[in-house]
Amino acid sequence: MNKTHWDKIYKRWYRGVENSIVPNTAKTHPEELEFQQRRLKWLLKTFSFPHADVVEFGAGSGHIAKYMESLGYEVAANDQSEWAVEICRFVGIPSCVFDMKRPYKNTGLARGRVVVTSCSMEQLGKDWKPFYHMLLDEKPVVVIHQEPLFELYGPGDEKFKQYHLKQNYLTGYLPAIPKEKILHLKHQTMGHRHHAFSELVWKP
Ligand SMILES: C[S@@+](CC[C@H](N)C(=O)[O-])C[C@H]1O[C@@H](n2cnc3c(N)ncnc32)[C@H](O)[C@@H]1O
Image (cartoon, rainbow, N blue to C red):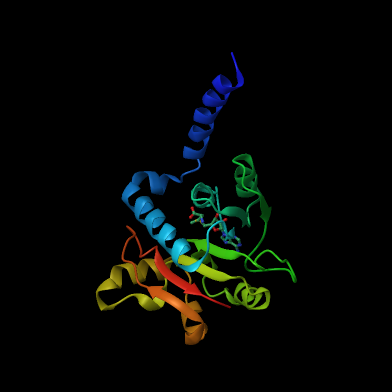
């Protein structure tokens, strides 16, 4: 059997591995994943440039990183969990351990890159300032967030707000960013427990 034969087999196999990095919540709510990917594709196309270097912070198992790679971007990732980092590396995404609550000085991780976060800054609660200052220092090309943004909930969103607060998700971040630095802001109501995929794009 020639190389093409084995390439075909392993390519199919590898796709199976990629599929297994999709979190269960995304598998049980495929419409949310489809929505998130469609919007992320648009955000990247609109606010970044072809073949840009992208870095995802809090990338988890790397399924969003892999998705961005499939769109033609050069993608690196990081996460606080060394196991998440191992999974990312296993599926071919360069990755390192990094804690957004305690960013060390001069990481260079964001410099000259497009920064993406997807439902990871949500986890910082009120403790987002160190990461925010790191972004201001490193001046990435642009920062793209798909995150639940507490300040965008409206009067009819009580149930979602309560869940957000109960989980101690991100608060206070949006009002801290000077308005002139914000390129795009959109409240997205998609998300079965909270509005997970609101969009914020800004230039530090
Ligand atoms: C809900 S998961 C989202 C993972 C991935 N971005 C996605 O969209 O599937 C939240 C991720 O944020 C990471 N995380 C939470 N706090 C973090 C911190 N302080 N620094 C870096 N990563 C963090 C977690 O380890 C986890 O992988």
